[in-house]
View (tube, rainbow, N blue to C red):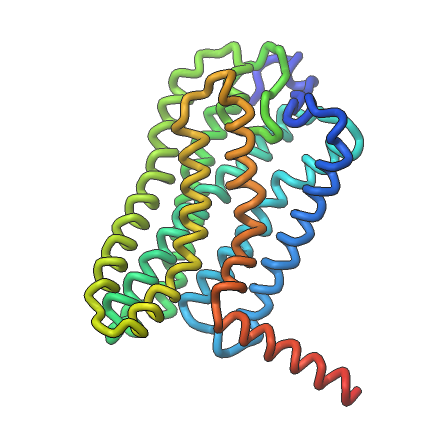
Length: 315
């Protein structure tokens, strides 16, 4: 419950990109194109995984879930940003701000766990190929997905529950393009020590834990690849995980840069740029990376186009 009547009836102002009035139209078109590409690319991957039986394996099951998550993830931020750029209205209600952060936090945390799960899947496929099918069965895949979502939901429900107990006394200007936790806490006139401590612990669990698991998985994968004598087999093994490695590097690299690099005035714009990477650009890049670097996905696209062409020809 928000404790002050002023805050309960007031709004926050999202200042992100507001200091670039001459670029508003260009930013609007750019983010609109990015949003359309993100939606189309991720919907295409989901459709391919569902309709093409050759892609109905654990690897593509996780990839389909990642695409579904990316659609929700980017939709918590970009539509509101597009509305601000289109209308010039940068206000957002306090409750609306908390809701946006809640969904952003849940989805970002879940993506950390899901990327770690996908790294573990690639580890089993490359390092224990003979036992891969029995180890990574449909039951385990299901529970790994459920565990990823439940972990993200639990930690962020706790954080937002604590945040809702705070009072906000103004100024109500958030120095960001979405309601991230740190700039919102700056506006509170309550004691935020407990919120910061709990957030630090839970956020560390949600990011560093999956990151370390991902790092260990790839160290073992690369070590195993170097032991393969055949150059062709080494290239094939690396190609099965290179797309995921690029996605992991983009996501965790930008995420860590935002939350580890000191928040000084000179780095404020740099923080916004890095935030764009993991909130906007990575969801758009994921389906492009997996499509362009994955032969099976490209073949599935060709088969889908051929089927559509055949139906159109005989109809």
